Length: 233
Image 1 (tube, rainbow, N blue to C red):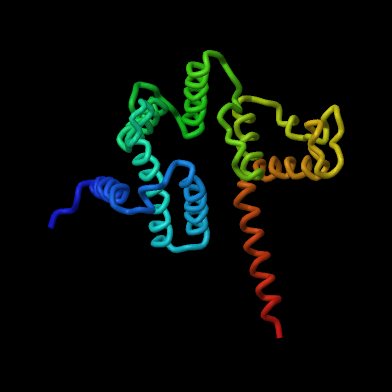
Image 2: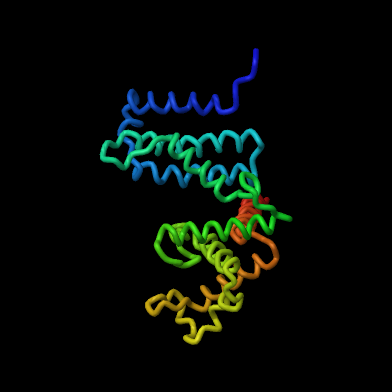
């Protein structure tokens, strides 16, 4: 039997998702808002499978993440107020973005290495932001502040670094106004510990490490130590 064409399974998922919205009471009542926690949860489960699971575990968890994308698109497709979209719109949108940001593949731009690809990507993205906002905006526009603080700090620093922001600005303890007491944020200044944590993120990035993944690895090591302590004679 001939193998299915690439993407055939995605078409099957579209049909399954559509039927669930029509015939399953639980699926039928879901909204973007009610699904939001599941999108975050499934993403973390996929990350856990990537770190400690098998390839089969990761495959399964990626399916759960994919389900969330299809679910949101199915919910959106049912709107009749002009704001709706379908999974095809989602797919075409990301495909168009990839083509636009890879002119060295789909256009006539030449690049010498991966670093140059990244530079071009950042330049194209900046132009897109300017066109969307009607002005240059900030390199930090679009950074989601709802993400975990460690990942947020790393993303802010990456964005700033690519824009040529001086590395010294990451040293919040060197600010004109000294950090406030622990937990203080009324004046916009971090506590001493907050400033140290932000600097530690910069230190990890300078070493070529992802601070979020490094802390997760440390947390797993601590978990194993606690379990060993619990099982001692």
